[in-house]
Length: 320
Ligand SMILES: [Zn+2]
Image (cartoon, rainbow, N blue to C red; front, side, top):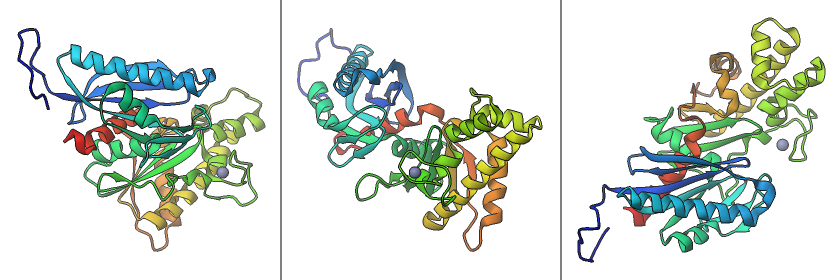
């Protein structure tokens, strides 16, 4: 990639290429320099401070990305491309952050802004979709051709990854499994509907439902798991209901996608086998003709989005 120019003594020989990777969330940005084999050379985190408004957030993204490219050069590496992951609706083809509730993006041409600032090719992706790509290629789904990554946190969203490629849908909005209606007429959902999976089984919904009936207003989903394990009846009921709703939603997904493996990530996956064991049983007992997928915990934790954005950058034809 380095052509021309006298090899002056002040110029160190490159120790190889890296990509600049940023995963921009509502509260924080996970950022890294990643080698083509997916290993991390350097990682850093920054607050998003979304309350400053989208222009300020974009300025921070560009500053951080530029800083990482400089750091790579200082470390004797060649930054060859950049990958950015953002939440919300993302037009990956055109590199536009179309809409985001928690960061405030409205039609931001982020890919071109990054290319302009860094002088490097760039790729823009959806946070859950790139997280799914990372889990499918380098994490809990590696070696399987058809992977559904399901992130269960404040909301619930999924990414279908087939032979290492994410499926975005016609409008960049595929994978919104959190809005499968599992309890018709049930809990009100942020999308305007009722009975959606995420209104019954997201970490936020589990904590909220327990707080309402128990009076423990600060209870989190993981508190509910702990209390259920200790024999708390209210917690047990809520946890079992949530597992049932998840199993209903995921059986629908399996009917649609027929994957080898469901990779469960997001904050709720921290419940580990307290979640996965009853979830496997719940899915198994609901299956009729569908094949039972493996149900495993994500391996890359909250680094999945950052690693996945790096993979998008590495995949760019200019990076080859
Ligand atoms: Zn909904």
